[in-house]
Image 1 (tube, rainbow, N blue to C red):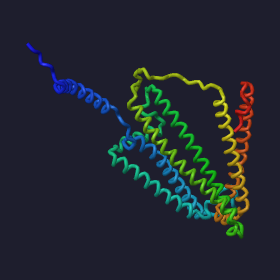
Image 2 (image 1 turned 90 degrees about the horizontal axis):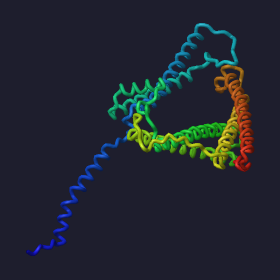
Image 3 (image 1 turned 30 degrees about the horizontal axis):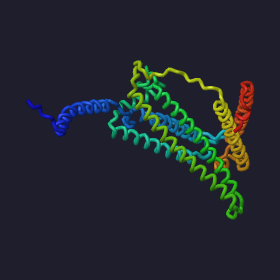
Image 4 (image 1 turned 90 degrees about the vertical axis):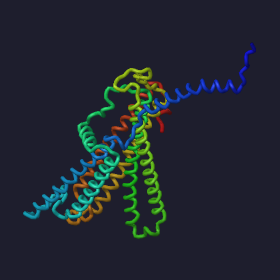
Length: 356
């Protein structure tokens, strides 16, 4: 009997019939794996809303307290007035109408923002009760429920460190922007107080440079804030899909504490940190001194004029204290720098590592 030789077409058909079920099964298994993976959605998290609402509600409480204090002070002044004036105290009974209006405007803005956040939670089908529970947990300082009994994977540890660095960067950027704004306010007053300021191109150019620096710093703040939001969302994703959640053991668990070697990178990092703090403290001290000098020039012991110029004896005293505190801080930072230089010398490091 002659055995039939299968043609290439027949072989292809047989292979297709055999391999298709296998491929389908693998694809189905991969699809199930992907579908099992959870993805953190910020707008579905009650804690995301709670983190925004807690400081707003606290600010609202503070505003209500200030409004109440002003109204009580005004009632007291209406009942009895004396000729004595305490120069070290805000003259509350002189003219508080403007302050009251500003507080009421801010109160309206805060209430509007709270309403917007609550409406956003409802649109994303987040129960109001869940948001309130998250608010209470934040106020009590409780840890998030999904962070308890969790062993961090190396990727979670890395993301946490990146998040810490970005938050530190944001804090510094905000502080730098604040100092630049205060410097701009002082420079603007200095330039505009000159009768011929309209003819001084150098003064205007200086203001433009500082204004551009503030704009760049604001962009930096915005971008850093976005990176923080992305990292926080990524961290929640990692926690949701961590194989070690609820204390389960896993091969990727890392409890290794990395010990940073005290080489060149370590020392340069330590010195850069101290140098930065000294530089920022000195900048703030200079601004405080300029603000005090300007305040002394326009200060008037007459309470009504003092309120009109928005400078009181209390402001003067507060600036003097802030200057003394900042000088002490600078002295402490310089002592830390000297100690660090001694430590580097005893460790046998290169003195050049201490320079900026």
